[in-house]
Structures are given as C-alpha cells and as structure tokens.
Amino acid sequence: MNSNIKITILGNTAAIPKRGTHLSAQLIQVNNESFLMDCGEGTQMQLINYGIKYSKIENIFISHLHGDHFFGLIGLVSTYHLLRREKPLRIYGPPALEKLLTTQLEAANTSLNYKLIFIGVETDSKKLIYESSNALVYAFPLEHSIPTHGYCFEQKQKARKVNPDFINEHNPSINDIKKVKAGGDYVTSTGEVILNKDITISSPRPLSYSYCSDTKYFEKLIEYNMGVSALYHECTFDISLQKKAEARFHSTASDAAKVALKANVGQLILGHFSSRYEDLEVLLLEAQDIFPHTILSEEGMELVLESGS
Image 1 (cartoon, rainbow, N blue to C red):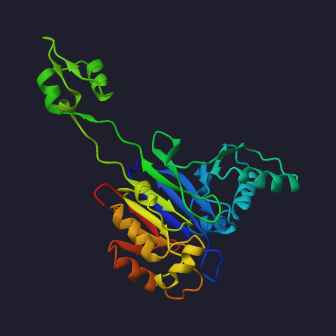
Image 2: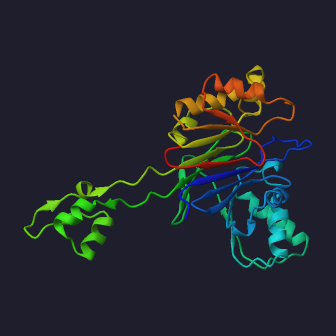
Image 3: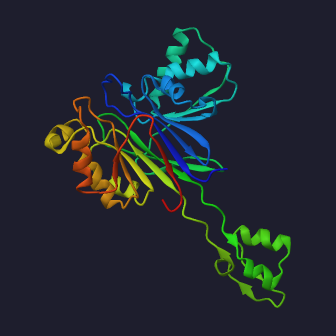
C-alpha cells in the first residue's frame, strides 16, 4: 500500500465555467483511500476523462451550497445507481444538502440501489468528522457569504516501532512486544520499568492536505492550517481587487499566500480562478512574492505528497 497523499485536480474555476475549464472538484487519495472533494458541474466527466475508478469513492465532501461546488453531485449519484452500485455512499456537507438531493431523486421517481448516507457538517472550530484505518478528515469553518467549511485530510499516525536493540538486549515475549507497540512501558524480570519512549522509534510525521474553498481572509485560517504538508487555497481575485474580494467573501492571491506563510505550510496550491483571468501568471507571481513555495493548480494535475517532500 502506498503511504502518501495524492491529489488530482478535476476542476479549479470559480462560479462561471469557460471553454477548457471546469468547476471545483478534486480527488484526494490518502494511502489509496479515495475521497471526492466538492463536485461542481461536469465532475463525473472529468473522472472519466482522467481514467479514475470512481467506483472506489465511498466518501464525498461538499464545502458549501453554491452551485459551482455541488451541481455535479446529482449526476454522479444517478450514475452510481445506473451502474448498480451496492456499497453505501457517504456525503458530508451542509445539512440542507440532504433535502436538495432527495427532492431531485423523488422528482425523478428514483429509488437508489444503494444507501445514501448524509452527514451534516456544522462546526465553529476544527473538528474530526471522519476516521478510518488510513485517514482522518477534519472540518473547519470558513468565512463566506453562506455557511462554508474547509477540510483537512490527514494520514493516520502509524504506531511507534519497537527498537531492535531493545529486543536483542531483553528478548521480550510476543505479548510484551504487542504491549510496547500499543504504547505500554516494559517491566524487566527484576522489576525495572523501561519507558516506552526509550524502547521505541517514532514513525514519520503524518502527511496532511488542506482544502480552503470560498473564503475571505481571517486569522483563524492560520490556526486551522498550521503546518499542513500542502494547502489548496482559493484566490478568486488579484490584489488590485482586494476590496471586491472582501465584499464578496473571497480571497486574493496575497491573502492565500499570507495564510500559507503564517501557517508554515509545506506548499501552497492556488485555485478557484475567476474567469476574468486569461493569464494566471499575475496571481502566481503575486503569491510567490510572499510565499515562494506556491504553484498554480491545473486541471488534470496530479500532486503526490510523500514523507520528506
């Protein structure tokens, strides 16, 4: 099993699509467990275009209920039905999303072959909302014109490894080794207690990827994204439109870069570009002037985060 986080950009355009671009959607794979993040119009076609086995997706996360972030969802849900999906599909997002989707299905007289599970996301702080053997997913509030959440996808911390020198010196039993792996201390035959930290080796720090869709700049973003391996942050506008960005609860490239710099993230990935920009270089240079480790997202781009990257 691959121990990494892989992100495939399916769409990165804001609000109004234009030729050759698609609206917000990403496939995020944490140690091969697949998550769909947002589902703008045309997302299922993008999954097909890039040869992605979307049958493996069991969890979908929706940031908010502006159409460019979820209008592709009913199409994907319907396609799963036509393909005779049997596995449950969990959808995380604003509570009102359940009514929106069920109303569409009822209007089409569609009774799905599989179970659709809705998990309403409402939180005023960073909160764990999903956990598996591979991954943790946290939700945190953003500041937009309607309730909106960002999401942080993180590898699950691996257990500490038992130091081979300890095994050679003390020859512990299998049960003792299991206890040490579970975090316990070791007691010798003479009653000496050897602390767990002295006989184990820590595993690498888990990788993490944070997705900040529509939001204006606010200081809490720094706390929510502190130290993540990579941060995807919207930059609908450039700094010459700072006042418009704030009025519309969006960010400039400079805003995104400030968050990345103050949060000490590993890499900044810009996205959610306004269709007004024919050349995105102005956004890239603006952000790099503050935070050099910045790239532009591109449709079809695959980013692989690995330990040490």
